[in-house]
Length: 144
Image (cartoon, rainbow, N blue to C red; front, side, top):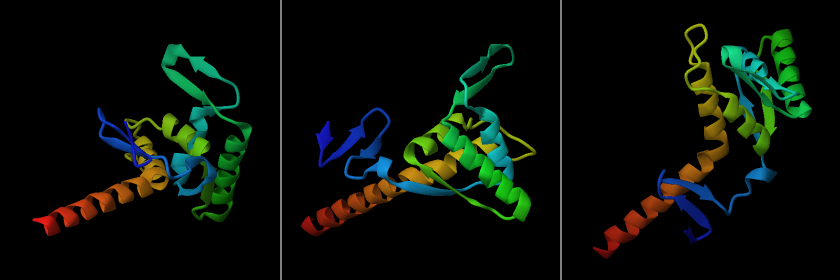
């Protein structure tokens, strides 16, 4: 179902904006140190599955692991939040490793990571969807 260069997945009622080139954009994300360590623990340069304790690591490019490591080092040295610049694929890798049910020291680490990534990557599509819906409502109200 393609319509106006936008595809709606009927089952999940979500939109993917084909006019927006996700792959060409770089996203500036801010994570807490605990979140970065969690992400780092979930990534591996080599694919690795340890079924005995349900610990699965996701393969990640060396460049992503280096970006995370440099951000962690910068935060450790300065004590300040550092921005992590990621492309679309790297952001989706981080989104995939973040499990919503992971709570560390009372903080819902996984869910907070997912929220940060999804709002930065897909926030514009949601805002555009709301604008379109409001515009349609406005047009329909003027017709009445």
